[in-house]
Image 1: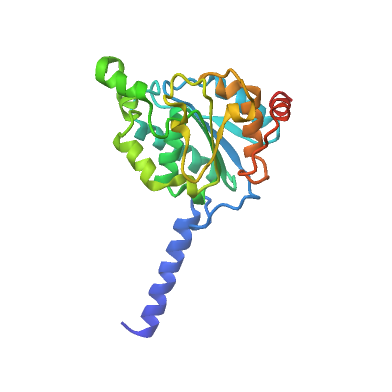
Image 2: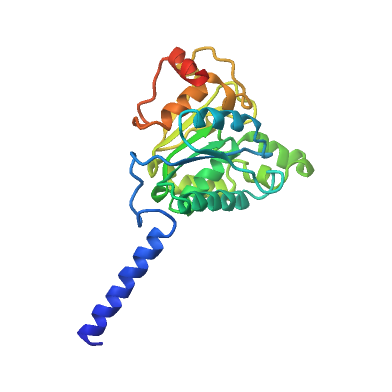
Length: 258
């Protein structure tokens, strides 16, 4: 192949790389700049209920950020891989509409979906920050009990949330917590994600709510609407470094209810 032909081929490859890297709004493989906040996408948990997240989204919107609570496919108890596709489509739509990036808030199993999306879809080039609330990132023993003793009441997503499942093994192996600024928050009062610190993720900023608000009585279902949790989420989505989580419970609660 002649020199001219080589130059032409190189040029074509460069153009293709540019197009593929930029067609979804990302910067061709570069991490998202922290000063480019965009749309906030909130991913519901197992069962797909949106009520608590709608309240949290409204509080985010009050700060001037666009926020959207996703509607999961079916009843939210089916294959979590399909929910990853739902999130990916929402991310692509936000970027096509001009958002410079996305922030993703995953509640409960929605955090597992978020982590799988980040690992599979090069999330570091699209997501500025990730926040997970009470997410069984290493599984929940309730899913193991359900799949063992009540398999008819434990659909596919339930089985996928059992410790050691192939999806959770994939998530753990990809070390996504070290790729995107990530806050993982949980409550010791969680009776759905057992043990509650299954939410702990290597590389993330890991926060147990009771370490900030001693004696806080917050259940798994109460996480999206708790004032201190809301305040911490708003802080995590702000321009300030995500690792510098505040420790003043009173200030967090005030920010959450403002």
